[in-house]
Amino acid sequence: MSSDDTFHVEMDSHPDDTLTVTLAGELDVNEADWVEDTLSAAAAHHSKLAIDLSGLEFLDSTGLRSLVTLKQRAAILQIEVRFERPSSAVSRVIAAAGLQSTLD
Image (cartoon, rainbow, N blue to C red; front, side):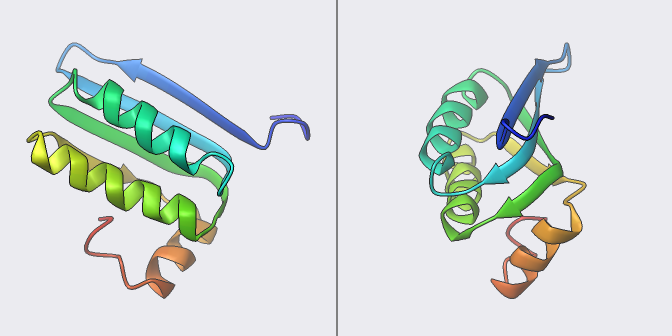
């Protein structure tokens, strides 16, 4: 990722009806609504959503809210959501917010 790219998303659909989403860079107020809306719309076409958080270098409270809201919306649609491989920066934010059980 170049220094001009502060946020990047990759999506890959798999035959087992899983959508894998890789988030990289900084998930903050500038991207939070886009992530919430876009991933909610994409997830509606799958039964499982795997979100790889290993590339996130920064997560603010609005980014965190977008992940929680995404999981809540998916639950309503009976879509399984897994948050995978959180970076150490993301793990610290999730722990500080007390959301480890929500964002397993």
